[in-house]
Amino acid sequence: MLKTILKHQNPCRIIGSRFKTSSVQYVESRARDPTFEKLMDKYKNLLKVIAIQDLILANPTNNPPSVSLDFLSRLSQKLHLNRGAASFLRKYPHIFHIFYDPNKSQTFCRLTDAAIDISRQEAEAINASLPLVVDRLVRLLSMSTTKSLPLRAVFKVWRELGLPDDFEDSIISQNSHIFRLVDAHEPNTHILTLTDEMRDKSFVASVENWRVTECCKEDCSDDRTEIQFSFKHSYPPGMRLRRDFKAKVKEWQRLPYVGPYEEMGEKRRSKAGTMALEKRAVAVVHEFLSLTVERMVEVEKISHFRKSFAIDLNIRDLFLDHPGMFYLSTKGKRHTVFLREAYERGRLIDSNPVYSARRKLLDLVVLGRHAMLTKESRSVENFQTETPCLKDENGG
Image (cartoon, rainbow, N blue to C red):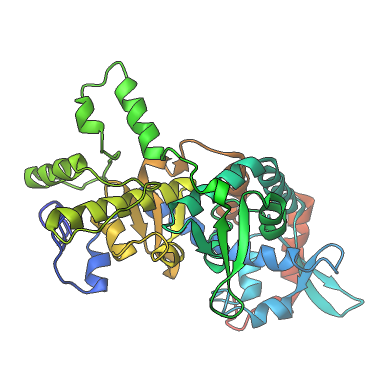
């Protein structure tokens, strides 16, 4: 990608010109952004924390909700807890409280008061934003060529979209004038679709709002016609842009295309037609990321929407081909893409209540074992010191 633009890389692609290369070479050739890489270093542990948190909260029979350490140890490999469950839990005493239940003769783990409070804040923020959530889901369906999506695909990104965990009941069933669930041709598969009266509803994509803002700036020095089909670009630090690459980007920015909520029309096999399809695909994934709470998503999850969105290109390649708009990270054994324009110094520029609550949990993850000043934290420390049975299988 971008064969002539990186100072210290050997990229394999230029916009509008594709060369064969292996997936490994392709991913390794991307220009890394230290800010996003540091953020993903934190997120990869946050995802493990959330997985354990969900297991605890899904077990309300215990009061307070908790799970046994034996149960978590059996799931260590699936949860990617490389040094075992006990070792991982000990790293986050502000989130997990380990205790021994003499009645059951077992060691258990529950959430700390701080973690429970953050979970409650997130749930309250989601419930308070239900109208926005409904609009988000309608927009997602409206980008589909059939105004419908497999329900299993929506389940893949329910957290990213800020949907409540019971969204089938609280969102779909409660808005029967907007959504319908129909049986698919496959067994045990359902399709979520818009009702007839919602199919003709029009939307403005987030990039179009940005264009209006740019044009209305008093100090705008760009020709208004240059912004008409443009996307906001910024590049990783140290990424040197050569003159020929800038010319390619400028040409691509001017290229007309079909927006994410517009009907595609007939596909053209010409070079211009291929470029237009690619630009439409960029517009669709740009809008998809704009609909997510944290302006980020795993590439594997968004790939489930390729057919519904009529994207014929490899999604990951699309992100790598446009480093000015997207940043692809491979931290934590997963590929995660960020909408570059939405972030500044590792934080969302335009925050929202759900993101704010999740950020508090991330802050506790970053805090780790530091600042253990509460009585609860000290009791965890004492328990770890006095209970040798908590050592994991690797002695961690």
